[in-house]
Length: 248
Image 1 (tube, helix red, strand yellow):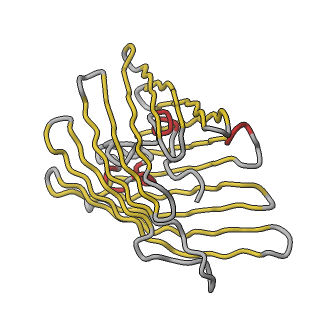
Image 2 (cartoon, helix red, strand yellow):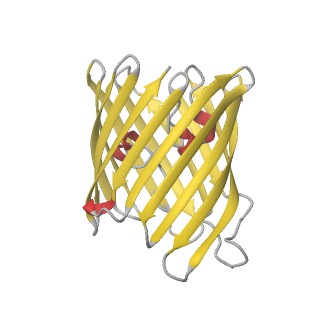
């Protein structure tokens, strides 16, 4: 799977997001933490090491109902000779400070020439809780049904992630996560967000396995937000990202 954590904000904060509440991109990072006070439309692009052929593009939409929050998302990685696409629908609700959600994802992989394509459907689940004011715990599990592409033994990635976020003050947020893909080593991730002046944010983060460093900035207006980020991946190099949200 290509870049799993969507959104330039999350990328700048060390690809953290499993415990960050009310994010427009929670439909990808932890469906249990989707916003509950507004509906949103979001767009995202991430270019790996400046190479056009390996670019992530994503969009997300969330809508508030009396029965909970509904969401939809789409993600595409690659170019005409190879691409991975995901289309998902999600739902979240809460019981007091305990939040829960699930999403169904249709995954499609395409290979050029005579190699063809294949697809599979996966299920993600997420939980979260506000332990105390400004201190959140979140966890997610991806592809819990252990799907495989077509009639092959090519399984979709399965991942467990858990983390915390803490609002140190009105201006500062810290995140820490542990992520384990069943095929790869444990990844430790941490990020920081600081409000420089009203509505203008600076961010930074690091990850292990793979080793990355990232920085970014964001601006929040009354009805829209924009975020930019740059990630340094060792040894691939620099990769830029941009997202924009509209909320109503």
